[in-house]
Image (tube, rainbow, N blue to C red):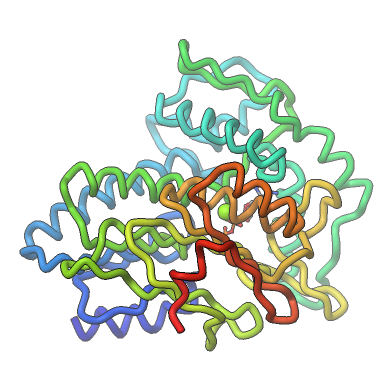
Length: 343
Ligand code: ADP
Ligand code: MG
């Protein structure tokens, strides 16, 4: 336990949100979505039950990690990397799980008025390349050119993706189109793991999958967990707010997560489809809603919207609370968040 808490502390900086805790049983994983993940149980279960349930969670996340990987293929499965590689070619047979996910992503594309678009791949690839180059050689950091971005944006319409649920096939009709599920994949997979835990009758579990927090149930005494939202101005050392949460997801999109600098200005990883540049409205947006997939999608979408448009969207959806943190550190939040705030 001592070692585990030491590990948790040393990797806490990698996640967007943190559950502050006493004495959980827990495991740390490094193999999903290029990030650090934790599974905790506060249920007071026997160790064998925790072993069995965490192995179940691990199997689910490993499977979705492989299906959603856009950089590697795995033997025996057609994943998003395969779909992207075959862009412009014939329909590709895929696992029905991938079909279900892509239909969900399509629904969220429409719900967010196109702000969260998994077909933004060609534009995101350009930013990814510039970020990687800047990380390797900060002195040579450069910004993408406007023409290059506009050209890529021509290949990002959602209808370039053909999904055939009957045949379980997928096809990108444009050879330059590409899928990127960075905004949604982690949250969606986390929700599948939470579904599994619920089916197993488990409560008192907390999943932290690369900062996507999903709380399953309550503590044995019925109380919630204090979940901290980082202060964007000092993400490694300060919290902007603490929320007491039960049975819900908590996902943050922040400008401090992945970025590079050019001429003293930071360029982060969430791209506004209108400007094709990093969205500048907020320092971070945190979503609290039960479905972790929805929370992940909305955190990215609302990060790219005005406060008014984001508020109107979540009001129309219902059951979603939001904490917006502005660049100057001031905050706005939905009415229902008030009674979750600690202090
Ligand atoms: P994180 O990955 O840090 O949890 P997000 O959930 O906000 O943060 O997802 C950001 C990732 O989503 C980016 O790295 C990129 O892969 C992808 N992305 C960025 N902007 C958009 C967008 N407007 N629509 C869909 N995906 C996006
Ligand atoms: Mg997201």
